[in-house]
Image (cartoon, rainbow, N blue to C red; front, side, top):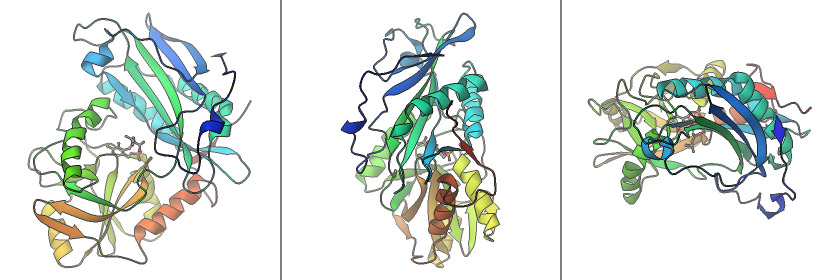
Length: 350
Ligand code: PLP
Ligand code: COI
């Protein structure tokens, strides 16, 4: 792998005590090109603008997929990844649905580990901070014929981050717009899924909500996931979460939280959840908590959910599952506690 390092690091310009999500990038990035039927020229270069043809397909047809993962530093300054193989596999599941070239695991892993080694100084420690990792693939072939690209770039960027939502959030259940449909690309981490969500999210924001809770496109009666998180509801003392489907992202945090909850003696039900059921549970005082879970957000408690002109408020103050589960999750991710599931992987430096 060819490595070109910066002459001078920008790390001293970054205020690590006030990191806003995704606004700072480390000194280097990883790039590989798919051309003439193969991935080649894997390299690490200074983080800098790319030169890309305005005719590249990505700009016209949105053929692009991405991943989101994090690296954490433990007490001894060792760097750890959380279930990285899951992200590596999901990137290629997304790529396949968008008819893009898969990135071989060796290229993904070697690029990621080498990049983390070179920019390891940038992995922040403590206070909910971590190094967010953004692998992505995009169509770079220069032609605007509407068909699959024969050329791609695979890149990895690193960004030191703090918490995604600094406060509990208020979400609005979608009753008109949809994020995904059966047979579509909802399960893929495709750029277009997010592009299509920004307009409904802005309208919700104008009404005082932080994000939208997506419902099934056919009936808008089942709650599915939020803008950047899967969802969990505490009804009585059970956690209920929707099953993944071709419309929902198979979140790595979601499946980890399900296992941690079960291991902590909390009953978890994976089944379709209706809006009606949430409204009824809320009226009876049984909807005690709701929270989103995802790599960026970790676990983000929801204090209120709006549906049409109704507002459901979550009233659980102490002994919140969201706090218990988040603490256990962060303990595993940062190696502060035992990783009995074997989810963490050390980044080894050559
Ligand atoms: N759902 C959507 C739409 C997301 O963007 C994310 C974030 O990655 C998630 C769910 C949670 O997935 P994960 O836990 O793998 O980060
Ligand atoms: C993640 O949690 O990794 C996400 O993908 C959220 C991102 C869209 C900000």
